[in-house]
Length: 509
Image: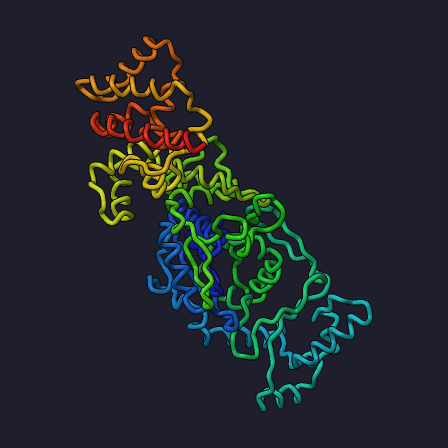
């Protein structure tokens, strides 16, 4: 491992909302920095101005804040290595590109877009569909390697548009070590002469990325697998400048639930789950849903993401952020793609919701219900419902019968389970309930067991009809706890009303 201080960066492009794969990259950078007492910064890579989307940078920062993994350096955060937006660093890149030209490690290319298109078309006709501008083809193109120096000077003086391309050597093996993948070897004959500096005066990603990582003293580059093909060029650029290379770690892809291909931005709402941390609305008004607005807790979202591609080496699945920092290491990140499981994501949400106190959830419910209900009442409802809920909102929705008498009854369950003698049995049980002096869950349960024994009936013959009459639904928290929460008078009154409603339903059938 490098001995210099750990400095890592998350470097998204503001071309749209932050995909959950990008959040995972940010998370792993955050965890690695915290684990190694290092610094985690964010840099906005907006060199491709044609793909810039207004609001995307603000979205990225808001999403990281919601996730609880904010960098300590970046735009609006301060730091000694700014600016942290590449377009604001524009003036610094050209001298580096010119330096490489001067040292004959790069060259000016004056080929127009039309000339390049013609060359590609000719190559296709000759049976070469994947024509590249490389160490072989550059000898027949308009560049400073083929043109006389006087012609190059004239074109530059007259403002002829040009790009600066990397001069990739022929037939050389580039070797570098990846923390996750081990040694990677690529021959330069398989690489083209990538553009480093564009005709619009902006660097390409490749040049800006290397210059920024060097000048910001980045020690480890932890990024997605999609950047692995670019890594050999980046290694060559470090060598060309005479700079030390950071250590690389290329993270595995996030795969669709069926394992068939990369989880893309378009898969989200189409497959019935979010792929963005928070809602995103396009300029055309199209809404892409996010985990925050769907009701997920940030800790559950982050916990789920951490385990998509990283294995702690134990059976532990629930981690706080501090526990993730303590347990995380890049050695346990897999090379293979990680299959996203939306049902497992819901399971994480359930675990996190159950771990919250009744008070915490009640505060959220008060906000959702706009203070319609008493706080102590909501606390009691949370206590009854949270073990059965996935989202905070579910407690209000699924537990609506705890806050108001039911108006809708489960007709299907009633028609299947309600026997001809059931009404009389529940009437009798109602009278038993009315006789209980100290009406709490223990006493209701004791009375219920005594009632069953006297009637010589099974538990299911009475408990489900009792539940249906009081709540209108066929499942939920324990009926003795529900009875204690509602109180004797309310339970008795609900049974009377419920039996009337159930009789109507049976008569309609």
